Image (cartoon, rainbow, N blue to C red; front, side, top):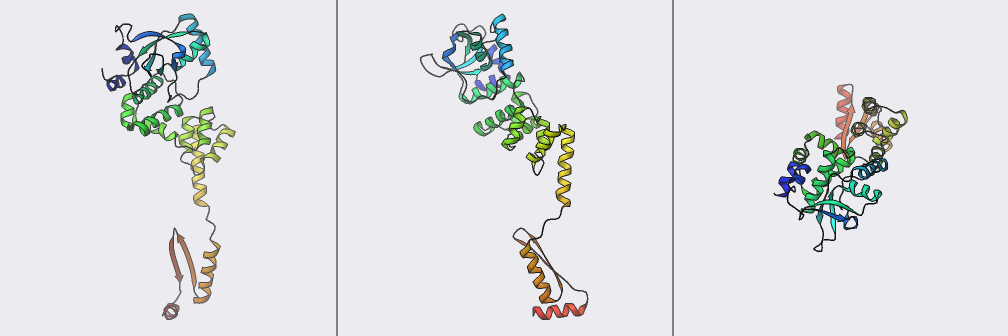
Length: 277
């Protein structure tokens, strides 16, 4: 079986491929031989959830083996591809070894398997899932369409979560803490000043629909408030008005702009043309 085929079919297929292959793939390893993956989509481990898993292990044992990949030729160092929560919970229980499936997979495939496991079990927060997709896109060249197919999600779902990783870090922290939902975050990303509006959303406990309305109101306010004129431009317009004897307006746009001279009779136009030579 190729690694890519295994990834495409999901974690359950990866484990099923090891059924009946004997001790060469299924074994028990000391906890100290295992280390967390260098890249793990999950960034936080809820203490209460870990304790609940530990209690289940006390009663039932570890029902599903961890998936690991070898890191050395001596067989004493392995990286956890899937099952870091079980590894952590096993430490809480006081186990000295855990059941594992050993797989020869590349680091890139290991990252994808870790993401697959967490997504399929709905273990990741929206931001963790988004960073998982972002890592696979930036590091291994996956497209959003490819990822959507592999994890069984829609492309807009993947795209929306990747967008969350582009938010200011302060907003990401509010999302991580649970003060904002992914729906709030997507609405706030359309704002001119998302952090200022986020504070209002959190203080007032606004729902997503109210947050969307707040962002729209911010847009209308910004459009309706006239921009303060540049004093240097205003002074130049005044001097031209005095020199020409006609109303002059200067409107800037980027590095350029428009010069508007108003006249009310043919005689004024002729006088202007004469002054301009």
